[in-house]
Image (cartoon, rainbow over all chains, first blue to last red):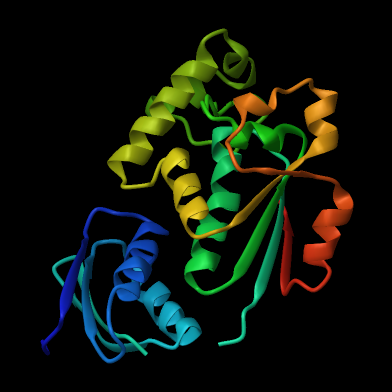
Length: 76
Length: 159
């Protein structure tokens, strides 16, 4: 796992909360900084891809480990 | 990124039907959309300061019921007094357990994200609703205002 500047624990939250919380967290970052998100909502895998595509942020990494999904999102 | 626009007409006032407009609006706002929800008829219930939304199994054969209740009380059972309150309580508990946001929270997130919440003035008059029972800061408008926004919206939904 690469470095990150801030972490968001979205475990136990369901659609659309992981995306909304991530958006809020990214708002507080500088361009180029990285947010690490941990979620348990399986729908968030596709949703974070779609979020990145539509917002100009970069989804650097998407991984699954024992029912937990981890994402690295770099602010565009 | 050029700003896209989402226009929604919300016409239903039950707990289950409250979710689509607020989920879609808050998400669209997070994606950079400019969003308006036009609340009309029973949809205005979603703008009350004190939400008391219910989910009804009545006339809703697709609704999953716990403990096989739909087998024990087919059709007519859904009309038993108190059933609505029981189903609403169960639905709210399940939602909480599954990490689904409450309508209050989603609505607050929409307001934070500057989703434009507009209320149909005609409905307010029709049902003698008090503006003071509804959220502060709403716009009370007619159909023309909706079209002014929706006329060049990228997506328009009727819910």
